[in-house]
Image (cartoon, rainbow, N blue to C red; front, side, top):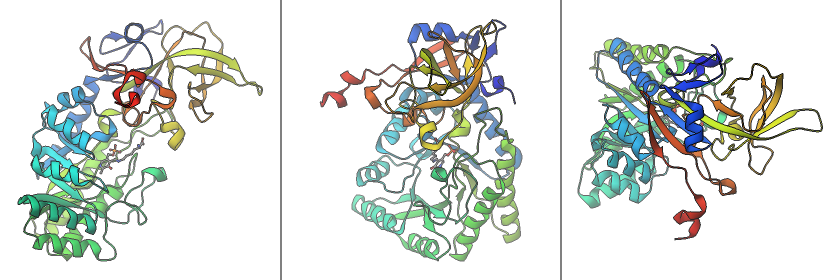
Length: 433
Ligand code: LLP
């Protein structure tokens, strides 16, 4: 894996250090739209989606569905692009639901997740006839059932179970282990009990079992175990699901030292687990639903920053500060996530230096890359950070009243603004309106 491979598929690197993505020059974009600037490359996203579609076709003879986990990144114009494919979408809040509907996702292709959905969210999901509400607890089953009774409708649901499978990833993004706040315990009989309750309900129509093990996972075996755990649980409770969903979570490399594990390992493993189990039990194949977030969008996104102040600290470290940081990308401060960066321009005549790339926000935790070796940066340089498409803008804040950045969509030499740069001080929320 080289640094170039981390960039979107359409990235081209000139000998002069200039970079184009989808045929568009990054310097020109930064000059036109200002920095920090985020862009999404259409081909890379479409490529990830087509690849997963193809892998499901090759590996699984039953029905399959790809539900984009919109928490990775969502905006209305972006959602409209995705809605043109046959992708489904996973939403976890009223606004994600509203955007999915407004973007044109057919309601039956929308699934509502979350460990503490509000009455308003549930009501809206039911009123809009969305595909499924994913029940996260016994308490929620009763809550949703009562709302359905009040509305006199029958709503499709899936149950999210906790299969007690720990995966090797950062603890903040492990979700299928015993102590997780997500899902209904499979081990102590609770999930079985809830399935029986749901099957008896007149206003709930149980169609699926779901689990999500965590995020940034590179080992397929646990996904296979999860599929078997869901099917076995159903069998114990006398229920063969129409839908089995082992969630999302397939990992992507952020640095040249990270592994790239072929997603076929993920898809082949879950497909085989379901197929083998159903063959042995002589049951029909359930529809297999996957919920990729990061795998769909991470590599398509690039963050561009302008270098401002540079200095040498007391201990001799070179420090270069950029015009963004933890407000647009809190992942480094939250999880110690690692990134690479590239100078957009000719650095060949400069000394190579190991530097700390820091942000402009008011705390020392605001570092983008604690140590990076590259041509010594100076004021005015443009730098590009690849693999910036997932969980950066969707977790961005207005810390220090930072304006959230402009976001572009680049496709075949054309540029479209997905989101204009915010002007925080003038926004309704900060104005108190
Ligand atoms: N399905 C469910 C129910 C989820 O909760 C998630 C992510 C996904 C699918 C998609 O997972 P992915 O394919 O993107 O790994 N903020 C963290 C990641 C949190 C993931 C939360 N759930 C980060 O920046 O790494």
